[in-house]
Image 1 (cartoon, rainbow, N blue to C red):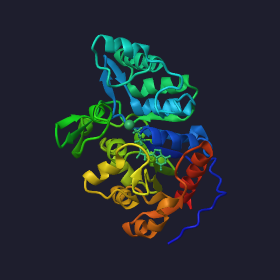
Image 2 (cartoon, protein in one colour; image 1 turned 90 degrees about the horizontal axis):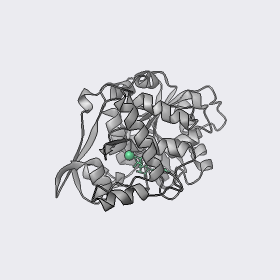
Image 3 (cartoon, rainbow, N blue to C red; image 1 turned 30 degrees about the horizontal axis):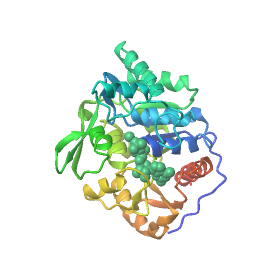
Length: 323
Ligand code: GDP
Ligand code: CA
């Protein structure tokens, strides 16, 4: 079934909330800012990859989004700052300290500020708003919760380890049997999260890792229900293209958890939560099968290699959900 999506819908007064991980979500949001006013956008961001190192609270997904939207992100790495230097890390290494998680000199300033404010009693949402404001971002950037939740993965060879030990320490090159989000059951959605999900004209599930970026957002009590109970549309953008993740272990993780690594696996993962799935041209031949799973497919270029593609993807994603 081929749906035709109008390309000229007026999106300027639509409100959009986006469930976000890091890099894929950041690129999508930068495109979205070209088609919907910043004031109408709420990004609800994963915090289960947050880690405390050297006594500092690091929020990788929030920082990736801030740096990307501020046009300050490293174009080669996709995370951290462009033009970064690494002298502080070299000093940590000299002392034999934990140097497996790279923190650039300027980036450290963000973590110092965040940690200091948290110690003064500010919430993560408050500090995040302050950081976004300092970079002149006008969208609403919300951690999904102010509470601490922590992704832990069970590996075949080593038992359970922390997410960053898996992702950065082991370069996600080990097989998993399970993933859990410690603390999620007792977490409370940050102020504004539930309302942003209930009120948005469109909720987008960004092209982020479904297992370790989107699932921990959904694991915060009330979030999954808010999504399932929406009367307006929810649309997901597939992070899997031609059976593979563009970057990172999303493809292997889906398989290891019993889902196929394809747009069908993504469709089954989001069944009951999203009504629509945007898939890449490369997967156009699977559109009918996505439809049979129960999500209405839209086929387009989803590889956000430049800002124009990201903006076009954002436009078609929102339009697909409104059409
Ligand atoms: P992380 O937190 O930085 O690891 O990133 P995310 O969870 O946001 O994203 C990782 C996933 O995003 C991977 O599965 C990628 O395939 C996907 N991704 C990254 N860039 C793009 C893109 O331009 N288009 C699509 N469709 N997916 C992308
Ligand atoms: Ca992440």
